[in-house]
Image 1 (spheres, rainbow, N blue to C red):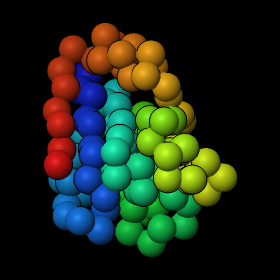
Image 2 (cartoon, helix red, strand yellow):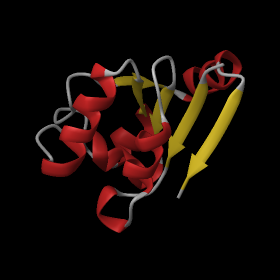
Image 3 (cartoon, rainbow, N blue to C red):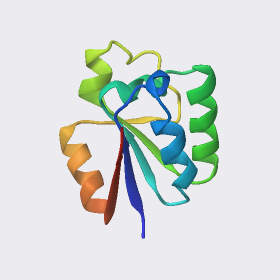
Length: 103
């Protein structure tokens, strides 16, 4: 049964991203929202490695488009991160029977 892991804290503000990815497994989905979208920046030393490892184990990576746009990050994203709008966010919650929020 897949889980949607929602990370909304910047990677520099705590361990939410690392904690979420430590328990996420193949078939799970990670959605970056709020300041969590800073983890989606390509070549960010810690987060970039965590996202590569997560993708390699079968975790699907997403970021919320309005939060990416609000921070001007659209042209600096990690290549494995897909963008979703608010409707896409809802679709992810419908697709994943469990949700965990990480702050």
